[in-house]
Structure formats: C-alpha cells, structure tokens
Length: 293
Ligand SMILES: [Zn+2]
Image (cartoon, rainbow, N blue to C red; front, side, top):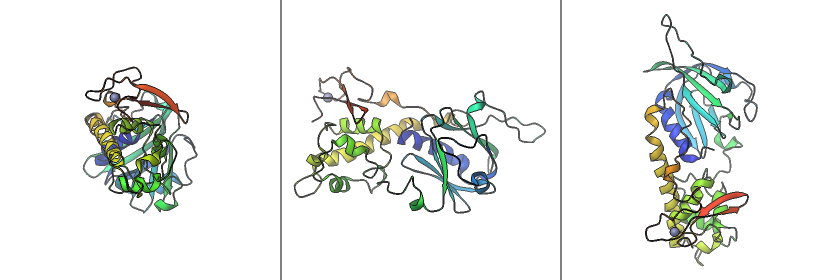
C-alpha cells in the first residue's frame, strides 16, 4: 500500500504536468472504484483548470478553478501515468495500455506549455477511490485528521498533550490519525527505531510529569520527519521516468532500517541487536530489542 512518502512522490511527479492544465474530457470506464464515483464527477471536472496539486495525509488533492477539489486515494494498487501518445494527422490519439482493463479513469488535458496530455488512473485491485468537496472540513476523509507530519503543526509538545497518561503502546498511539495524519505502519516502525523507542512502551511514559514533552518525544518527532523526508528524497530520484511510466513508484524498501528485516542485524552503529517482529493490533511491528527502550 502506498504510504505518505509514495503519495508525496506521486504528487511531486504530477504537479508540473497538471498545474495550469485544463481538463477537456473525463472518461470513467466503470461506475465505481472502492466506492461509487460521486454524482456528476466528470461534469464537475470537465472544462476546469487544475490550479494546484496538493496532498493531505495519503490523499491527493487536485484543486479546480471552479472551487471544487477532486480527492484521490490510491488504495493498494492505484497509480497515475500519462499515456504514450502518438499523433495522427496532428489530432490527439489515445494509445491503450497493456492492462487497459484496469484503466478506470482517463482524462484528456491541455497543458499551456506541454499541449495535449492524457492522464490515466489504473487500479487493479480497486481499493482506491475518488471524491469531490468544496470545503475540506466537510470532507468525511479529511475532517478530524491530525497535523501533517512534515508541517510545523506536528511537534513533540502537540504529541505530549495527546499522550499524557495514555497507556496505549506508542506504536498504536502514532497510528492514530488524529495524532498525526497519514503515518502508516512501515514508517512508524522506522521512526521508533530512529528514536530508539520500544514500540510497546506506553505512550504516556514519554511525557514529563509537568505535561511537557520529554527529550525522547522530541527525538521521536524528529525521527518521524527524518524517515519521511529520506523516503521522499529516495522517491524523488525516480521522478525522471514518471511521465509515460508507472506513477505508483512502488516502495523504497532499500531504505528501511527495521521494516521487514526480521533476523537481520540492527543497523544502529555499535548495536549488536537482531531485528525482531511482533504483532500489535493485528499488524507487524519490527524493532531492535537492544537499542530501543
Ligand atoms: Zn539496535
């Protein structure tokens, strides 16, 4: 499943091609993805200019000139790509992809500098979905989300307020979308390792008696930002091939210190621990029992 860094990589890859582009036609090849497309979806997009491509948690947000925002969640296998185009008598021609049966949404666009573009949304398993909203607070997907982990609103003091006297394991507390938005299972394991915090530690023990954040909670906020930024940077190197290629960009496995590394030596300098896997709330947690406390 694409996590926040993958979605941000997709956003950065799409933005230069979409910002300023006019949506000429929208073709929906089915009535639904995970959920039905909202009413008048295509009609709301057609004729509009995309004014910007944003992201909130794991949602891509395409801002339209009519004030609506088109929201897209990639689910497990959703991806965007631009069609390989050929020109016939200087008219636009859509070349179907090999797996056309999974091409669910096709947009014909005109970019002010690039000219005609065909954007295709492919999703083999159809866990992705799309929605429309005018006001972010009215979106059931966005209302109630906590701060973006890469924004200044996410910090140790903010976490301390949430975690004070909480007995829940820190890993579960960090997966709570009201605490921090869009942080998934993989990067929680990575951030806890980076901050040398045991995933089973009760969240409240990282808060001082005064209610302030401990140094360890500071390290955790820092760890979250660092693992996400490094993953985004790693993803950025694949951007050159974005156009005409699979925009899903996959996972940045080689950068994981603990995730999916059970039985391997801990990469912390000077630590001779071995990565272990446990299951918390039905999901795998990877950690080092020596340097994480
Ligand atoms: Zn270790």
